[in-house]
Length: 319
Figure 1: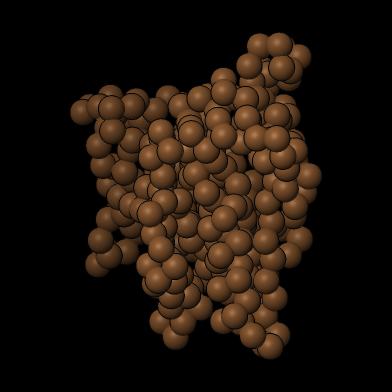
Figure 2: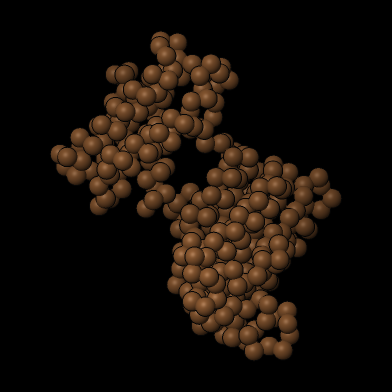
């Protein structure tokens, strides 16, 4: 069942809304065999200080590599991966402010064929700052534990990458704002339920570029894989020399089929080392297709289409 990634500014009310969503889903699930999990920094005893990269707070080598923050994300990722399945609702409550991190979570959900979505908590910056200041000044230890040092808070706000519903890893995107009352919040949760668990929920398929492949009947599978991917890399480099980039058309062997299109990143020239790294990564993912028959016969056109899709996904991620 779905993975719901909660995101928003620090101290914007994410945990409050995540708990409301947990109670809502618990009511909807009832006595069914579906399970519900709420994962957060608090549930894993991750301190707010691990996100503090201010001088004097952490050793220099730790700050430069964001080591403490990476360790925290690794713990969250492991917790999600352990419970995510087609029978489990998983709410991940946290900053989740890096688009690459949200993309990683999207891919994990896709790998187990379950949908995912983003729940963004909308809150004015001044309001979130005031909440953080009140927690720092509170006499309650629990409130202080949920606060960020001012420099850390400012840095996290500066680094926050807003979800973009035009990208597949931030879609569908649902928003609950600070002022939303119980009725409006429930309306948003209802829309989320219908999109992810209702009758019209999408069928999720794993990334075809990583599925096992069958052997090509007309020649050696690995030779064709190397030949077709190298040809596409050469065509991209040649077109960049002519007009600088844009769309690169990749013809198929069957004349009745339309050309494939590689959409190059706008305003960015790709070098041979970068393209070769992507090519080697793709080949590494698909070497296991030799001799396997689970997906069927993979001819040159099929391998070309897979590599074009793989490149377009990689370029979109880097935008």
